[in-house]
Length: 111
Image 1 (tube, one colour):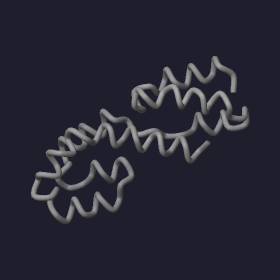
Image 2 (cartoon, rainbow, N blue to C red; image 1 turned 90 degrees about the horizontal axis):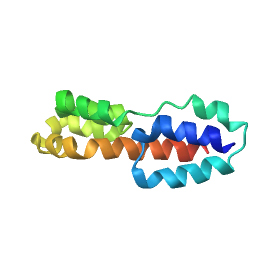
Image 3 (tube, one colour; image 1 turned 180 degrees about the vertical axis):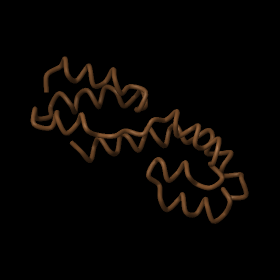
Image 4 (cartoon, rainbow, N blue to C red; image 1 turned 120 degrees about the horizontal axis):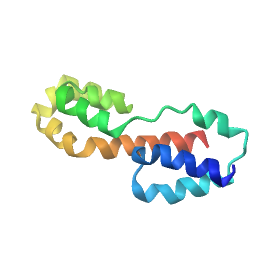
């Protein structure tokens, strides 16, 4: 891919990834084929801020974990009422990082 497109992608999606992932993402995208560019544009990354808001509002029901794609943990969190709300409170601090990690996994699976 050309460097200008890669830089535009990174600028548009920077908040969806951890800062230390950005150089790796740039390197991977520069080596990728042009044919993957169109499909890359259609990837739906989870917004970490929305994950936090969902966690604050309905995290005790596990909906935050469902949102980021952790279906199994979402079910367990739902059944245990957020681990007696202890897990819910812990997720308030972790869920944004979880969303960013899931976005990186999605990008790596794509490429």
